[in-house]
Image 1 (tube, rainbow, N blue to C red):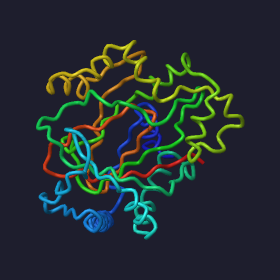
Image 2 (image 1 turned 90 degrees about the vertical axis):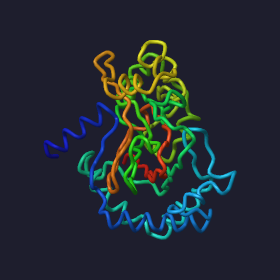
Image 3 (image 1 turned 180 degrees about the vertical axis):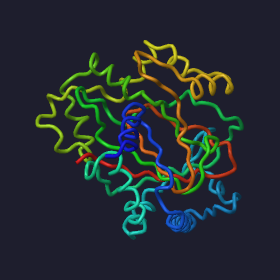
Image 4 (image 1 turned 180 degrees about the horizontal axis):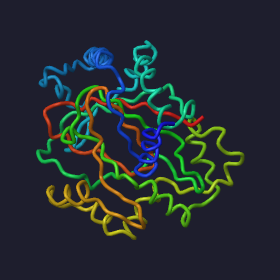
Length: 296
């Protein structure tokens, strides 16, 4: 690895979030974006250039005041994958992952996800206070996640377009909690993640881990910063406290990071980090896809 690559890896290990710019050629992005919207138009009658079609069906997209998503996108992503249209995107992402995390250390799963979201009814962007969660348990003694989430930007995405927000460093806070609160005999939970953890354990029942739903509450109890994070507050003060300033607890830096980028960028993040979605107050859909990688 080069010095730059080592620095990026260390940055990811500390923060749990890493942006890699211009990974995918813009021509390839435009091609998949065009196909993506063609399929959406065919299935839902929605045209990106005609906002009047976005909500013509009162039952879909669905969501709350923050943002709305289309139900039924799974079949579109499966069809795009089966067509081979996503192969060139994967072929561009893999070397970028290899350069940072080591050759052949991570490989993509077959399943892609759409993170497309449409504007909600909120008109002022704020650091979200609800729905903070993680998507993977913390295993005691294992500094690495079972998987990596890779966000692929099909268009320019700003925070105001409903960007996913991540608490950088929260996976390390969770690691500290797991040493105290983790328990063995979690075979059912481990088996639920078989697609990304098979072969990592000799005896799953002996693995000590902290489940995802047992991370946030202890952090709220021990840290006023997290207590404030999950309570409402004015946008200006919350943006300053959580995004601009952040906090440090037991030498672990933590900040709210909106996952923003331009077409062709990717963002890699550790699914053990606490994250949630923010309000899309723009007049544009957020066009992001997700591809997961598993350890080899």
